[in-house]
Image (cartoon, rainbow, N blue to C red; front, side, top):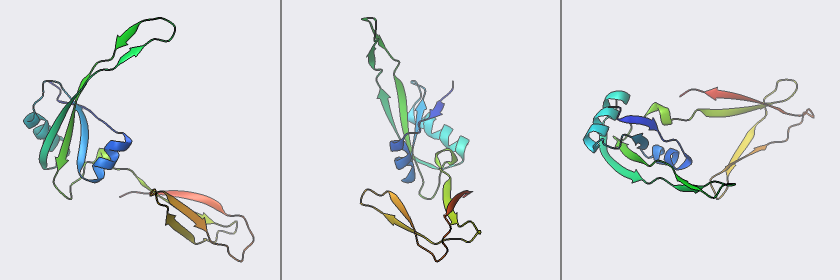
Length: 141
């Protein structure tokens, strides 16, 4: 029996993952103990607790034909791991932007966060009149 079917990666689950709570779609007949053991052995983490939710299927209607159909439901598991441990699937790569002029001189960036938590980047004006170009580098963690 396949207990862990797939990780559920959405905006909400990524926010929960930062706090150590990871979301998986699991088999409908799997118990909390089985789910905890499988996550611990597959990802090498210590599981603190497991919460399960039965998600009902949605009733959807077709556009041109007057018929309804029902999508299949599934079981979702929220797994909390010990503090300081992470599961690599839920990690996002961090990007760092380096702004340089046409002469390959780096320019200083000012990062500010607005009230919604979004990052705004401002380029400081320098004495060089060349237009800046952006280069992105992915920094592995």
